[in-house]
Image (cartoon, rainbow, N blue to C red):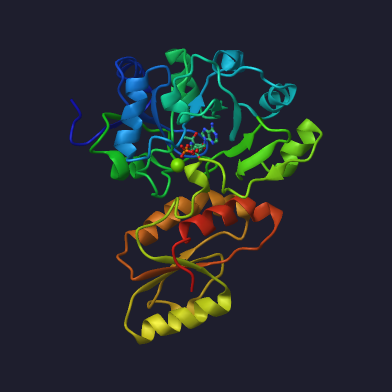
Length: 329
Ligand code: TXA
Ligand code: MG
């Protein structure tokens, strides 16, 4: 029985969470990146429920979360040396690795592919859950398909509260953007999704260059345009485009919101400004909550001001492009 509203609870609900997972149910839990929607990764029926609840196409693979690197060989095979080195350096942490899957990993988890995504999250509640569960937990971000990822328990409640039983509340996610995904199954390591751990950090550890995916050939929803999108029409623009657009919207008496690291005092009281940090890490941490805030205002349009096009902004830039992919000004 799924209650109309999920229960939100802390560490005291760990035993309940384990019970729910063991009988094939779903539990949302915090990680350092975003909240995950977890199911027993060995239970194909439970995994299918994730896809149903999220309304996510079944061929989009999930990340399996582990408690400890000693579990890696139960989930992957032909594990290359670089994977062990990356695990040692970055786990627990915001890095997911794609490896050849162990034959026992259900195809439901991998979207039918022979590879599997694995990571150990760096969050005490997630690690306690994973340790006590003793096996892998498959978990995509705990939002409906194509929506903004949740970085607080309240976000999960608003996304999926009517569809799941329990949300473990670990407060605000420390990183706030999804993990870096590195594919280690090809000739050269490839970043499928940029995140807090940069390509340079990965290249430093493995001693060889990594390429950035163009995002076209992989079946990864994080690489599809319009992933992470608010419901309100949103556009990414330069400052001059933004100024022009705001003037236009105001002259038509339409409501507009701005997401920018700059201040716009000239629009005070007329435009909803979501002021962001000029530091990429802090900006990334706040991004999804800020988009959610703006999305709730019933605005006609959200204008997102472009951020610098350099390495330190890679992950933020990726998410901004995806959040605004449907519309260009
Ligand atoms: O930070 C994160 O990674 C969060 C937290 C909950 O761990 N999870 C997350 O899951 O972002 P999700 O499902 O929203 O994104 C997982 C990404 C998707 O883009 C998926 O396609 C990709 O990982 N992925 C999973 N398995 C894959 C595989 N075998 N090959 C290529 N991409 C894969
Ligand atoms: Mg997601």
